[in-house]
Image 1 (cartoon, rainbow, N blue to C red):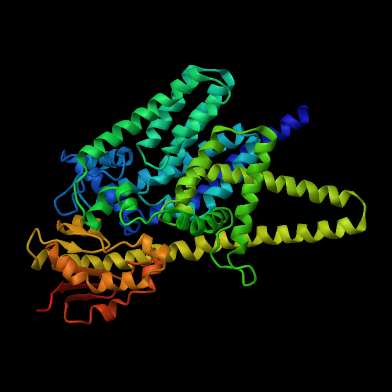
Image 2: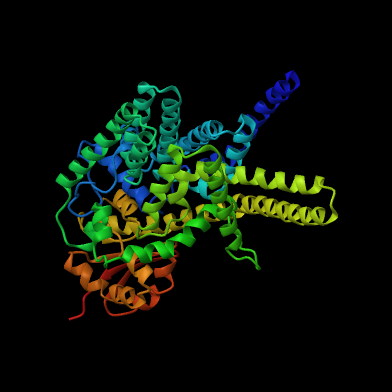
Length: 537
């Protein structure tokens, strides 16, 4: 017994050192990208930063970059409140961007630590939990989200503490722990609207074992948060039938607009394979697909993790994490956007736990087959062990390739894009009237560098599921008339505009569109072009 304790005492510092080492690539990337040349890459990040500026300047919770500065009723306010602290301390833009990066980068170690605690509470030893989480924070998807002003890592961290406190409440029958869990859940609901299924999950988890007192303490804070945010946003939403305004101000409004009966079934059928593949990418990143497998390796990794979760439920029963993952997964599966890796971060600790549990179970089967002494079983065990080792080596190679090549390439591309954009911004500041609005995918950055209001190019999530290429082509062809009807005369086109929208990118040819009489070129930079929109008579 003393020998086991001594071995554990040695392994725990080693595991802690490993997780600290695993965080170094993320910190290096954060340092290199501390000036946020990629601000606005996801669009949401720019809107959070703009909302923080509005709060810090005492202008209310508004979208200052959008024409008319409507209230920000799409994103709950916790992350903008944190960013408002940066604006308060350092009001000069862009000199305050390293302060924003400090907040973004701090979320990853916090997420890693709460994930370690979660895995321990679900049955992992501390060394195993740290080893697994070290691999998790090396994942290039996770690392890239840690250098963006996105809410998912913050949400995942707060949800982790909610789950930890809820588990303690159930084990100790503690009203105080249930209330603490509910408070964390309430904060999570004010970070993003996506964790709203936590209400139903908590009710089911505590009601089934007949613990109404704990259910009441747990449910009160998140319910209050949901009611307060829903009431405030409903009272401040800008009334409009315009698709662009709805997109900027309401998740639900954007979802319901032009929604066909039972179209959520189409979303579900298309999203389900993407969901499984995205889980696999958070375990084995597909920086380069295998010739024989394609995305099949990612799908196999995703199914491997799901199998581990199901096995754990059969052995230990259903926990709050399982109810929440079920509700949350249902929500993202019937939503009008593909459930990519970013959307799955809040349930990543559970999938990582399932993957390591299934891996250990599979390794145990291989060891048992090898020890059986039967030559046939030994051959099979050797084959599967070789395949497993090959998959592990491939995963390590893909992670190394991402940190060595992919992530630096993405940040360098964003840096080059900003250099071109800033020369266009300088021309705008010199030649356009102060309040002249713009159309550009980098609407937040354009506003911050020029002071001109801006809105994004059209967004077509439903057309992606309907495979309606003609609709997209018509919308872009009619962009001059649409822009001028909204009082917009200038269009800034950037090379990275459609990097995150391959569906539209393969349809739209900007060179062909802007070669018509409706566009007059004003500025041409290596990665940006500014046009005046002229509607032909």
